[in-house]
Length: 50
Image 1: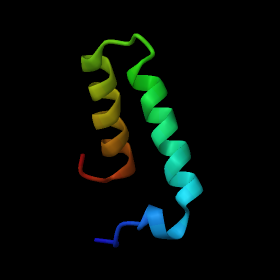
Image 2: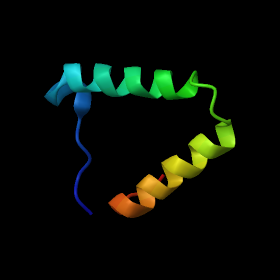
Image 3: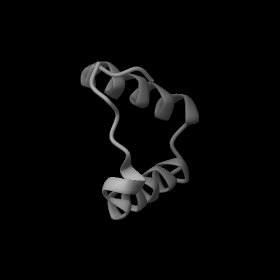
């Protein structure tokens, strides 16, 4: 298994942007169960554990 990226060290700006996207999605009005399903499916597609 490949090592995970240490985002705070490698690119703090990328971490900030990813966090902002997640905050936006969480407050978008979508059902939490739908957001979780999308997260799980994206993890499956990317071959990573969620």
